[in-house]
Structure formats: structure tokens, C-alpha cells
Image (cartoon, rainbow, N blue to C red; front, side, top):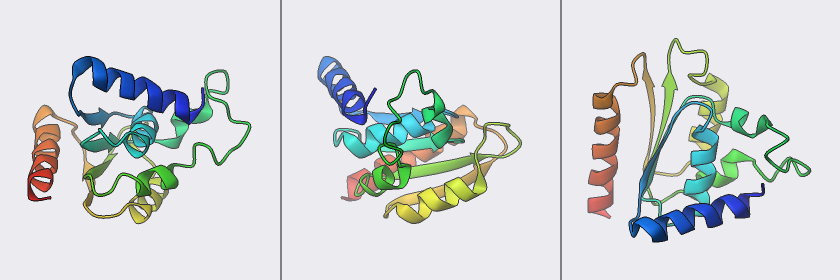
Length: 139
């Protein structure tokens, strides 16, 4: 799979549901969420929780012949002006790598947040989503 395949897949889903979604990408799929949000402008915002780049280690799924194809900082920088929340899930084995999250946060442009939590509760996700909606309303 190439990033263009992922982009086309999400664009097709957006057409099917006739909506511009917010994405919540939990550990391991956080990287996929970053690629989708960076490549598909219909995504209104992204909450990416935990490990991100590990998603693309599955060589039998993703075409990794060019290691830069899935370089996440490039995708993160394309999410703006849409809101981004990066989350380090403290205490979880897939909760994130501090250096990776710091690099992604640095590559991101406002509006962005870097959160740290021990509990990915529905309330935590709702708070992050509400912040994204408030940001979207202001722009």
C-alpha cells in the first residue's frame, strides 16, 4: 500500500458517509491517522494516541521501498489549519515514545496540543474533540 491508496480510501469513505470526519487514531493506528489527516483535507481534526511510526513496520502491507514515503513529520505539517492533538498514554506499552511525539509536535503547526494522560477515557476524548470543534468554529 502506498500513501495515495490510503488517501483515496478515506476520500471514498467521506463520500459514502457524506461527512467531513474527525479522526481518533489509537495506538499503532496513530500513524495511519496522521497520514490520513495530512493527505485528506476533508478530515476536520485528528486525535492521535500513542505510538505512530510503528504502524508502518508491516512490510507485507506497506510499500517501504522508499523510507521517506511514510515520514510522519511531513504529514503532520500538512494538517494545519485543522486541529491536532497528540497524546502520550502514560503507562501503556503502546502509549507513545516521548521523542517521537516531541518530534511530531515540533513538526506540527498551530492549532496543536500535546497531552499526557494515564487514562484514555471517553471524557478525555470528548474534551479533546470539543477543543477541536471550538478551534474549527473560530476559523
